[in-house]
Length: 586
Image (cartoon, rainbow, N blue to C red; front, side, top):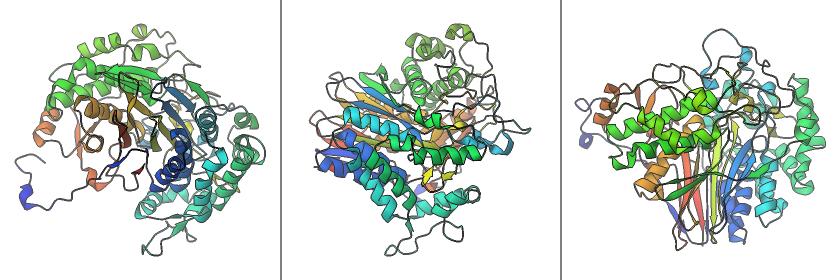
């Protein structure tokens, strides 16, 4: 709608959506579901630290919002104390060892939008079903983080999730919507439908607040009890592991017990850069963290902070930075243990300066990945999504991911992203265990001969980018992250702009209008000035304004916690994601 035809807002009722921030001094947990945030906050109240709290919240969130994450998925965690270096705990989903580049035969026709622009696969076998599942890492990762950085027994931190699974979670309209959106696919998998739909195969619905429908998961409660009693290896060895492998292999997935028994989470250094006086700590490698860092380096070179953030000039430069980072991502990023990946170049300021210098100031030109020779790449493989950019028709659906943050009274800070990838993951629940498995194989390019093609034991290119900001004294100032698939990276770069460059409060930063350039369209908040949107269209951007109040998830959905030097904590949550919340502890 142009300015000349837009209604006079004084004569139109407007639905205002916002969320009040939470404040506390004794600790804070932010999550995408209240039950998860409260589980973590209870740990802080009882003297646990931020890692203890995040582990409890992470197990709980897999029960309370099972469509987003759970013990059948994977993730990454960034941890930093006020006087210690940051660490990354990695527990990604990994391809089973029997996976091969040709395991997903391609079919003719356009690629499925749910496949991020990859070629379409016969029967969508990489999108849902047994062959779409990758080896999960959540149990290993949370347990490793706890053993290295936590203080409480694993069984104590699993207990809230176990109670939620056994007693059930009240169903809200949001739960009903998530079930309804995927109803046709869920019904194809009897065990998943049995657990999460009603007896007639329809979504669970709460009619009256006083008597809500309850989503119970007794088989999952038994599995969690086994892990609490026998430790994390109970997931990767013994009856649970055998049930997973037998069910998948009987259905034609290339799994063996070794895929689970040999799984290991790891601890490493973060990918860190300085941005306008703050340090960003995130995950590196074949993740969203590498693309986030490249985006911020490009924004720094373009000096976007000197412009009015809602101006056409600022958004044009920002969109160009995001498109360059995505072009490089699609061309070159993959598991560096399997193939050359220019990780150092993509996080290098000199490379960012070269690319920024090529951008036109008044129009959107062709989007090209960096030259192979400049990147130090000699493998000669083709690039994924070669036509990414304004002329492309590829659209990329967002995924099912959750994010949690925790900061305790001593300043120990944690940012955790975990996922099943798509909503409801593979839609495969292992009978007798309650374990809903991820569809992590969807992150691979199904076409052989590309950097991110399928290979046994390989990590797929993931979107997760949990992050922390710290000041010159080393103390964390902000923990943040989001769900939203490929939209995560653009969201996080803009949050850094809002917090660091514009000095916004944390809730204000989360609510500020954003853009997303992870698809061919330039998606913009309809709250941006109409004159700005028109100017961007004239520059060659394929603009697509979106009204966040329609709750259709057009942008990534963040939560965050900020901390002042005096220790005051402020928790913030996406106002357009109904269940998200932050809980503080005095």
